Amino acid sequence: MTRAEKTYRANETYRTNETYGDPATAGVAVSTDGLPDWLMPVVRAARTVVPEELSRFLPPESGDGRQSAVLILFGEGARGPELLLMERSSTLRSHPGQPSFPGGSLDPADGDPATTGPLRAALREAEEETGLDPSGVQLFGVLPKLYIPVSEFVVTPVLGWWRSPTPVGVVDPEETARVFTVPVADLTDPANRATARHPSGHRGPAFLVASALVWGFTAGVIDRILYFAGWEQPWDRSKQVPLDWRA
Image (cartoon, rainbow, N blue to C red; front, side, top):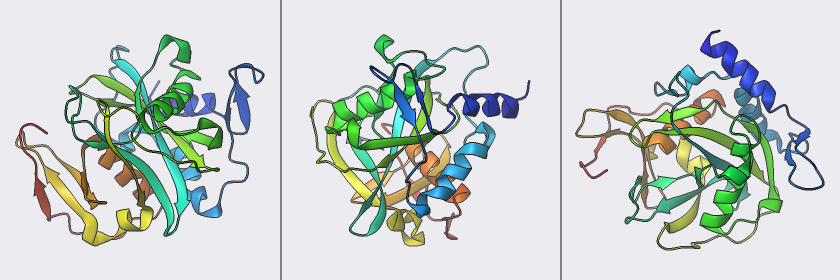
C-alpha cells in the first residue's frame, strides 16, 4: 500500500459531521457544519493532501515514535482570519523558546492514537497550555501524521475553528512563555516571510510576525496550509534568517 493510500484511509477515519466515541461521555465531534466560507479551502486541502506534500519528514514505517498532536486553531479577530500560537518556555528540554501550535504527547486517557486519541490530546493540551475552553472549538479535520526527527514525535495536526472565543493566556510559565494570535494576512504578507537557515544546513520557511520568528515544524505546516489553501503570495525565498546551534 502506498503512503497516499494510507493517507486516504487515515483521513476516512476522521469523516466529518460525525461524533467518535460515546457522545454522552467522551465523544469527539468532527464537523464542517457552519464553518465560515473562508475556511473551506483548508477543509478541501485536508481531505486530499498526502504526507509527502506537507513534509519530507514522515513517521517511521516501523511505527516507532512518540505519538502527539497539535491544535491548528483558526479564529476571526479584528483583522480577519487568525491562528492561535504560543511561545514555549526557554527552560523546556524539547524545542525551548520556539513559537508553536498548542499540543503535546498523547496520554493513555486520550484513547486510541489511530482514531480519537489525537483529537482529545490536541484539545486537552491546548486547554492546559493556553487556558482555552475546548467547548468553544469545532474540530473540522486532520492533516496526515508528520514526524519531528530531533524529538522523535509523530505529530497529528488537528484542525479547529474557534467558534466561540474565550480568553487565553499563559497557564504554566514553566511550559509557556506567551500565548498570541497572528492574523492570516500577516502570515501571507511577503514582507513577513523568509527562509530560516540552521547551522546544520537545514533550511525551511519562516515567518517574522507578532514580534516572533516562527520556524521549524510549525512554520512548515503553516507554509503548506497557505499553499494548498491558495492563500500564498509570491515571496523572496532568498531572504534568509540565520539560526544558532541552540535552536
